[in-house]
Image (cartoon, rainbow, N blue to C red; front, side, top):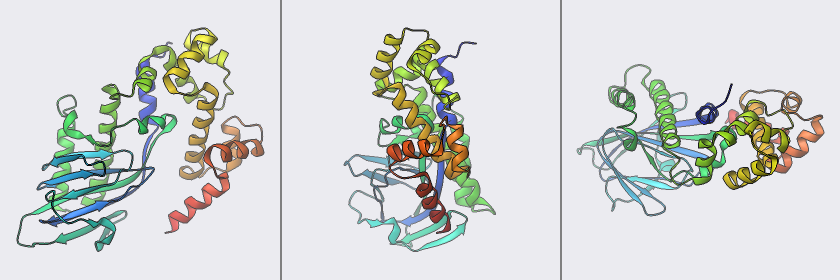
Length: 318
């Protein structure tokens, strides 16, 4: 059966993970300013369930947010949420917090308790796109849900549910809000991908070129195979030279390097999130020995597999 380009988009979205999420319900009265620092490797999600706010990015770009607006900041850029552009700003970590449940806490900043309050639900999370991690760097600094409303009307009831849960605070509201936020964030990313990835011409070519898609899809489905350029070219239905040229032009890398980096991203997932033994991961990803896998892992990731596992275990205990 011929694999068409949309299957690669599905593969990308299947590989999407929003893990390590820490959520905050922020209730603030004007004037207020909450700053979020640069967080490499993290994404930030904000939903305004009541009131208005101004989003100011470190780049200087500003956006007016109204009740019902949601946005996704994929690359962890520094930014601030303000009642107005002249409000004083305080780092979010400086506000006292109250645990609600699990990974959700509440922040209240009442500069003027008698004024109407703004309620914002925020999440900071690890953002992964499986083997297509380079696509994250090509994303805009801010992705607004308002740009998807016409094309994907199913977002409307999700936002309405988030607003209702945030305001009524019924039993279990925090957990429900967190799950809804995950879905809305995923829809924002999917909308950007399916709309053509903005100006990301290289990856747009990959996603829409059936020949390249078939080859990359094959690597994603069977990363443990030591794919040669000739085998991938056969999957793509082109000559070896044409395939290698197209692949490099679209992705900026070679098939061998792409496969190695894909394997390491999957290895981190298998080791950290699925808690698989390192030896099992090495064999699953096509390495003949643990030593060969460890050398490749350290060369690409910068740490040994054991060190990465220890860091994750330490984080889980904090």
